[in-house]
Length: 113
Length: 114
Image (cartoon, rainbow over all chains, first blue to last red; front, side, top):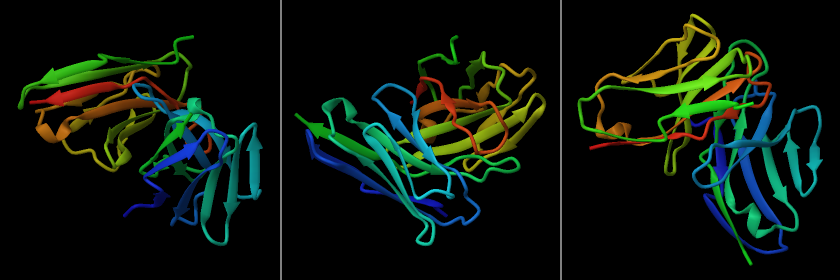
């Protein structure tokens, strides 16, 4: 059972455009939703995260939008740059007990110059 | 501050061989875990540990063994390698138990089983 569904699988955006990656979760006990960025040959790195008590979080050009009732959240990359080309993973976890992160399958983003 | 260090970076094994993937962190993190990454499958949890002497299975534990004798080290053992275990393996750590904090990942071990 896939608890976090991520789409699209791949995305091509022109430089300066907006990249949007969507995730939906099934486990209503999730209360922590991070996004990870992975460059080729590297391990994933935490990019930005949100908790369900807010509907939006912005850090620079990266924004998470969160819709608790729909059990969906998305990553928006404004003014996308070629350096943003990477694989992005969304994830969910509960903030209690021996919880672990459950990842989506990833989105490969290519920002064309 | 090295963070999470994984060795080796690359490995080729023959079917049936055993080996240990090493993971060490110098951040005094309680939580450590192993993930495998396969194309189109995302990151799948193999095993995790919430402290020295405490380990548990994740989503895909079969064929793998772990132990945690110290806070710093969390090795992953392949008991009898199979081609299905060809993957990129990542070790991750977190300062607290529970998912409410970011993970720090190592740079990965690319394993090929022939």
